[in-house]
Image 1 (cartoon, rainbow, N blue to C red):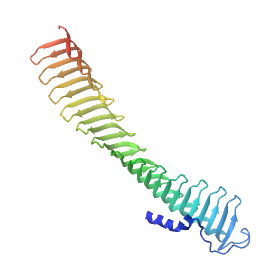
Image 2 (image 1 turned 45 degrees about the vertical axis):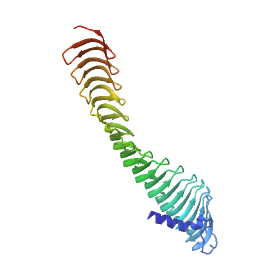
Image 3 (image 1 turned 180 degrees about the vertical axis):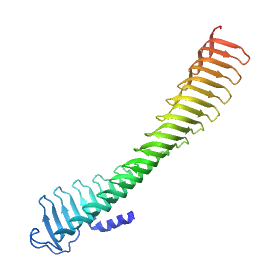
Image 4 (image 1 turned 135 degrees about the horizontal axis):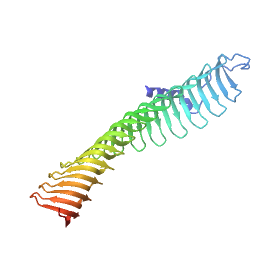
Length: 344
């Protein structure tokens, strides 16, 4: 329907596009406007504020086809009804913007085209002199919005195609992405989920072109709350997030079967946690920046066990190493080697 309406506008305004003006078929008005009833005639009326109307009259009102030139320099050419712009008409603003379309009671209403002097353009429906209903807005940078409008703002369902190739399909509220929507990036990445105030907020899924995927909570465009991230290689993290980084309690399951369960900060293992390796070995204790740091217990697959302090993933400081056969080495360690034996 919208396409048919726009085609009808073009047919009506074709003479205006070519530079001519609508023909005025009524006879010339006789006498003075203020002293005579101008009815079914054509005349020129100069208003006290400097505006000028040239066109058809009926019972001394602008009625029919005419041109209204504002003192500011803006000009309307088209149809009038009972003194008001009603029907089809073209309003050219002093700044170069131009509206071609339907009018009702001096307001843009129905189908119309607004062409900005900058090169931007809106084609669609109007009500109460504002963009209301379905319409397409083309930006000068190449971006384009196609969808619902309310009171001059994007409201309802719509598709926004960015100049860089990104595309959003979903709901809008007051010119902002809001509700359910899908953002497809030109790179191939995509987000499907909830939006609020133009950002990802609520539940959603972010898929990367390499196969990685995050499913969980979003806050102001970032991964925050509880979520699961599946890496392209099959590793999987399930837990808490903050600022798109693992933060809080979480479980990382490696594709080889190893599992880390513990606390995270700044996207790294930090705090208390346990790591069970695929070969059966395990570590339980303190972590810092993804490495064993602080006090911890490492149990080897063969039954050996070390209880003590660690630094940068190695036995450093005071610790006790108990072999599977019961032999015990207790003392000061450095870089995984016993430096000094300490007796009980």
